[in-house]
Length: 115
Ligand SMILES: [Zn+2]
Picture 1: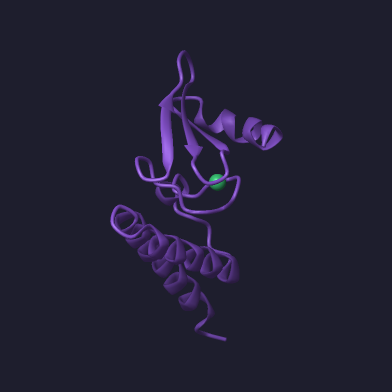
Picture 2: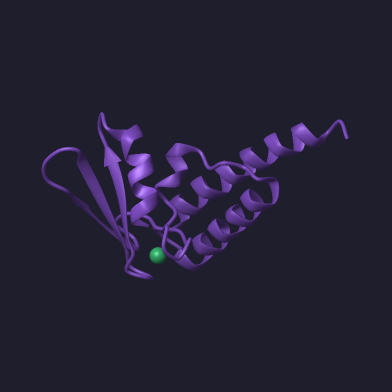
């Protein structure tokens, strides 16, 4: 199985492509964008590909669907420290918290217990 590693890399590329394409499509064709995002998720699960940190923000932790700020998600900036972005999914209402700033690593553990 020489091609196994290559296949995973291809899958990662595909996931990245599909997600980026879904995000840009979401402004004009949300149903199609959702399909692409769902496909990206299936590829990710099959090949056990970790989503790129830049792509993570586009997946709702509640319904696992595509969320694009300004399209089907509402973004609010929290106050105080650490700075938190609250992205509310319009589909399921789940609030996705994204911590931006220096305490990012500490938040990884905290996020697991709250969600
Ligand atoms: Zn959702």
